[in-house]
Image (cartoon, rainbow, N blue to C red; front, top):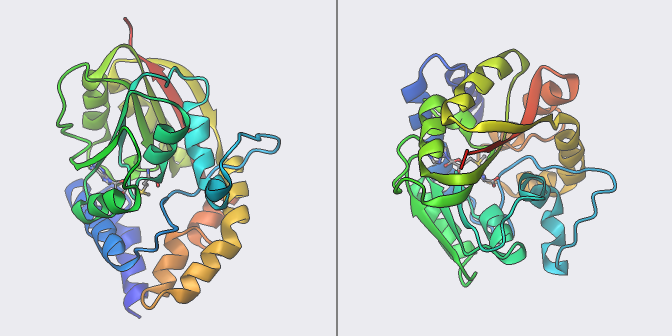
Length: 272
Ligand SMILES: C[S@@+](CC[C@H](N)C(=O)[O-])C[C@H]1O[C@@H](n2cnc3c(N)ncnc32)[C@H](O)[C@@H]1O
């Protein structure tokens, strides 16, 4: 029952009518999840990306998370990450920042997240990873100097923000001339024009624009049994977890596979 009410509240808040409340609600949800769901083998909170024939190599211990890492692999593939100062905004449990730090040779990776409990968990789950640090902060007010980063990564986080345009302006400010902004997230298909207008506030040039929904649905399929096993072990809010994880039968799975929801990837470059 509690979970049903919770899912309804989520649906109402998520329609964009109450941006400040929406932002507060998402932070509360991630704080709650990070306090109650601390499995050491879950470093990701994204829906994943699976592309047939895309065989990037991973160490054996990372194979179980291939579908979720795939979203980060597609985000940074071909970008000049080696030696770069990388910022991930909305780094969650830190698996994506950790992947970039371990596989792509950056000078540094800073993971920033609005949820203090999630940042604490990210530090614990990714301890000992060279060149990687996590801190608390708000995407709409980035706590960094102008031009501080060469690459800004943002994966499946922007739908939580109260003001995506403010976030985009901040990305444009903290990215060094010649630097990159790589973005992936989902929206109702009818809101994609708004999203692109909001992201344009970065002042950066749009270099690449893709609809990756089919690859995300393939990842949801690939991760289904692992998610079901996790949901079975949940001691509370099972229905919410089913929806939240995008398992088969969830509103998200239906929306993405039938086309009402689109998952898109964008790449921007700052002049310089
Ligand atoms: C769906 S999770 C994705 C986490 C990670 N990117 C991944 O792929 O595993 C969204 C994350 O965005 C964070 N977030 C939401 N609003 C934020 C904000 N205003 N500033 C920074 N982080 C935020 C949440 O706390 C959460 O950890």
